[in-house]
Image (tube, rainbow, N blue to C red; front, side):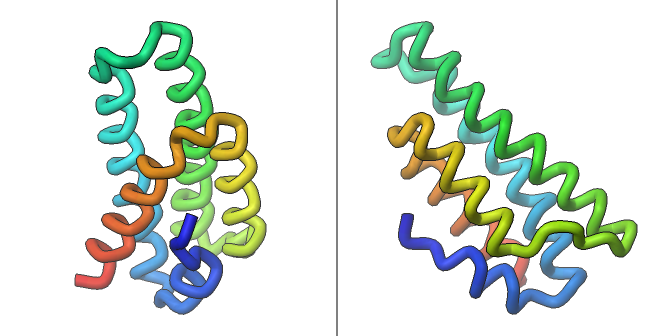
Length: 110
């Protein structure tokens, strides 16, 4: 993935970072809808991909909640390593996750 997550997200203000993670959670649900409705995928492939998006989404929601409480327990570098790990479990997710990241980043900067 080309998105420079640690640099771009690390440079956001606290308010922008919270907004980014909240928008990212939403955009990941959009990605899941795309997976679910893809008639070219087998049921097994759908479930497998949605499983890994869910792992990312779980952490995105918790990251946002922790940021709102002033508790940034994991650096953006750590978070990025997690995203890359989950995408590596199903590399076909790369484009969907990249879209969600880029769209979320663009939206939080408005």
